[in-house]
Length: 187
Length: 375
Image 1 (cartoon, each protein chain N blue to C red):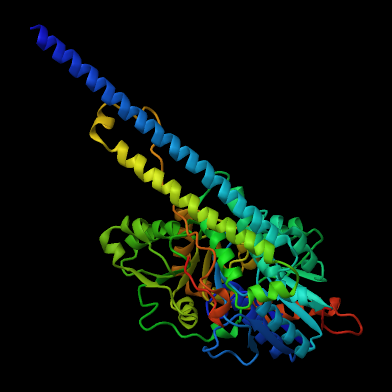
Image 2: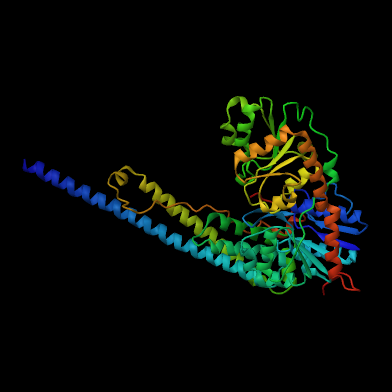
């Protein structure tokens, strides 16, 4: 009799420990998503800032300037990062930097190398931050699909994190070498 | 006069601005002016003799959709060469705020520049964001034209100053001799509609409801509908026997458009709002179609207060059914309205409109001096 009670109590304790370990794990996953999201937001803001600076630097032709500034402004004005607006900014930047002879023309008109390097770095940062964020989202969504998590509602009221899907490859492989064939993509 | 016209959108894709530029250029040539148009275009396509290609356009996100534009140093260099070699008396740019050739032309040229604004936009973010860059280029424009009151408001709000209102024209001769489609209008009478089917403001729904009323009393009346899109549930609500008398043509070519207007006894413009001018209405008038149109301000003006077409209470199917019924029953009234419409539309014929544009050119061209490349 006593042994049975002890076994039941032990089982209950073990179950409790297990459940709280699972809950803690889920909590850590949510925290990771949040941190990744913050990093992604920062990277996107940085990218649009560099884009605006490029548009305003006076080295571009006005049409390219207006194109980039418009897309960058839309991306920032969307408030919370908006997949469509960010993809549009990517496309605008790719169309601008992918023009044949773009880099050469810029360099000839003044030292834009620093600005372009910064844009490239910012775009790469977006690429990395988005990868890590989606990775965290995937792990969290997988954990929340588990039977125990759903039955015991271990996630509480936390919203299910969403993937952030955008087109983020700003630089064409080799903008200079594409000759007259301008970068082509469809909306 | 030597006129250089800049079209910002690619010549390969049909659109309102491209059509406007083409009609204007041909009307100006008809008036004896020397015209050169520069436009983004694919090299392979044959172009009219007056069009100089500025290279392929790149599809980019612009104003919430994807536009095919030409920008960058290469395009700027092409525009600069065209301006230098053209030695124009006046440069006429279209849609100057779009990041494309027109803006580049303002940038590279000095001298008399006229700009036409086509689109009405809400206070644009683009203009806002790139203000200094845009402003510098747009400051060179000495005469501004808006094609509609809405476009003019946009222009005044964004750039200050004022603009002359010159509406879109219609090339009357392209419509006046069109032949009806085979078997139309037919002995039982026919109504017609042309426009995007899904756009609620085009009012197809109003027409279909009116057709339901009319069709029951007139067993052979048919309805001819041309335009892109899916008529969908509005059509589905019609009883099956009536639905069989509705003929959907889908999107039609320019030539067939002219034939559609000639193929019906009553052309209906049931728009519920939003039309600043109604190019479709003007085309129907040019084709001499008897018209039943919503009583919108713009329509009433074009139809001379009802003398060149029947007006009915906007959005009211019963009123449309009554007006169309009256026209169907009275061939003499139809003939009278048709003649009045053909007469009224002369005011919007491209050669007439082009003369108004030339007056703007003359106002900005100083006694001496031509368009030159900016230093």
